[in-house]
Image 1: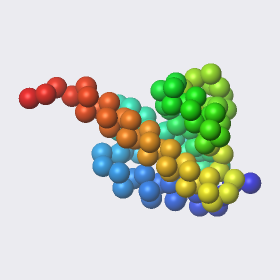
Image 2: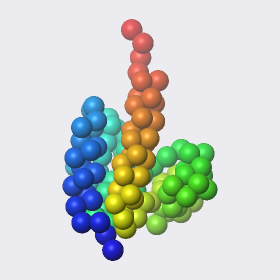
Image 3: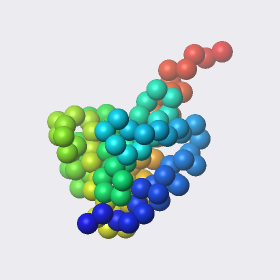
Amino acid sequence: MPVAGAGKQIFEAVTTWEEIVHAPHRFGGTEYRLGHREVGHVHSDSLVDIPFPLPVRHELVESGAAEPHHILPQSGWVSIYLRKPTDVERAIQLLRRSYELALASQRHSSPVA
């Protein structure tokens, strides 16, 4: 059973991060981006999907922090089902990790003056 208000709780956390923008996701829910890179998206109060480099994805799945993506299980994407309040906190933490990776990538690819 989904956690009532999970999507709103995630929205309130993620939209405080510098340079994050949000928009409707093409498959429903809310998408969060940093520049051209998607940090993750939330499907209502029930599911969060987050992209990671494959080594990070493998680490998260092996540790039980996330599940393979519900549609693309071999990709770098992971899914977090929001069944209890601790899942919401874990999803926010993993979205933050994706955000920090995107931020580091953005800084690395920016031209140095």
